[in-house]
Image (tube, rainbow, N blue to C red):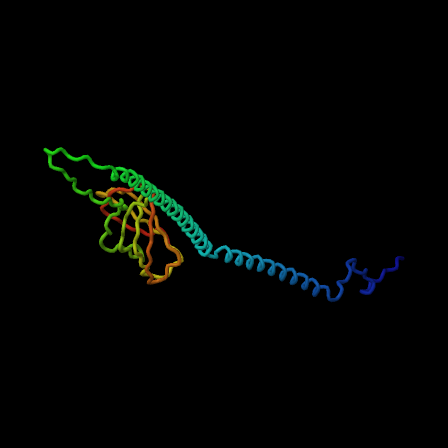
Length: 244
């Protein structure tokens, strides 16, 4: 006879094969997840801030750099024109001195030739002919520099007024122009001008002039020079090439 086996009690059930979750483990997992999210948000915010800073730096205006470059170019052009004016002035003065020396030599030679002739005794005219007299020769006058009369009126270009305009030969066969210039606007460190001469509506010469440290309301005498051959003209026009 078989003896019945009694049912197993709850205490006799096999223990679970999975280890028990230690206390506090969910809190550590949540902490790691929150730390990862914070790091990701911080990284994205850093990228956004860097993009905004880079964009702001790229949008800075470059106008001051361009203005500085334009000022340097104008100053260099003024210096170049001033050097050309100085060279032409020196060359003109040298030619005038040579002309003066040649005129003095010619006068000395003429005086030396006239002295022996004056010492000779003139021959007596024939008795049948009355003596003749020659009218005295007019005194020789030195050749004057070719110069046109001042151009009438006042000319305006930009904030500058040009008056008492005189056009003449520069002594080496080119045009020279002189004018009184008034600055009716603000003070400028430098200015470049061009004067154009016309004959019957056709351009015959262009002349360049400049000024430095031109105060507001001031008036100065400006000289313009050109390599175009000297000749006739009937009109003049001024324009401002640059100021700074």
